[in-house]
Length: 337
Ligand SMILES: [Zn+2]
Ligand SMILES: [Zn+2]
View 1: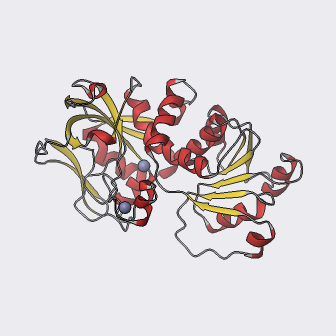
View 2: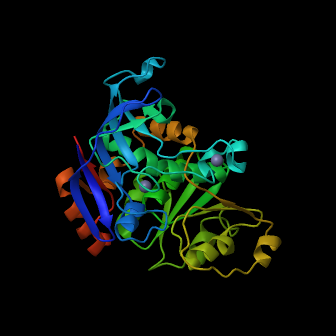
């Protein structure tokens, strides 16, 4: 069967690979469409320390069940699903606290192990989520769950004003989750096109920090107090510190962005404001179910969020182009079959 294989940093090819062996505890799936995200671009560039080469990428997946589950009728042959790409060991501290999304030994599909950018894969039934959503929508579920999980970590309620720094895929997920939870949501970015999509995803207000002062705009939109919750979905040192500077006293800060450098903090703000500072990683099954419900209700601008759909054969060239011109694409999806 065909697969997209990252051979070494900067080199991707379509190659013939062995089909996965059938096993009793796994379902066989025909891959239909796979979304690419920033982490795949990092892997292609050789900048993802978790990836070794050669590697088949792909963790945002829609697929059709080829051989169905004998115990779960919702996972019958022919049903279309999306999937959780994570594993959990069941033994580590995170797993023992029922938080397998943060498993110390997690292996994400397409990152620490080969992914779904190929014709057939096998997966255990408990990782699959059946739905009548379109293939495109199913591929958007996983990236949106990351933002939904961050919103869950922030314990967002209808009484909250929530500011989200960054309107990429993850930030958009956090915005739609905050809106879905009934909060008043403020989207922050430097790109007007992304802010426009954020509005369609539920942001009541937007701030373009290239033109507007983040601090005075946030005060103006929050009765002079600052937002109750700030979600950081960029990963830059200045947005990491802005989150604790701008959040209200006794507010919550949630970090999903991955900072690549050291960040220096005015730590007295943690104490003075008595902040809850929370990390957020990957997502739980309940986040998947929530995102599927949100998409089934038609509450997300799917057409705006996906810029490119291309066949598997074009994927190597597309990765080169994306790497050379990252701003040209928001979301690329690869039609596998
Ligand atoms: Zn992703
Ligand atoms: Zn674990």
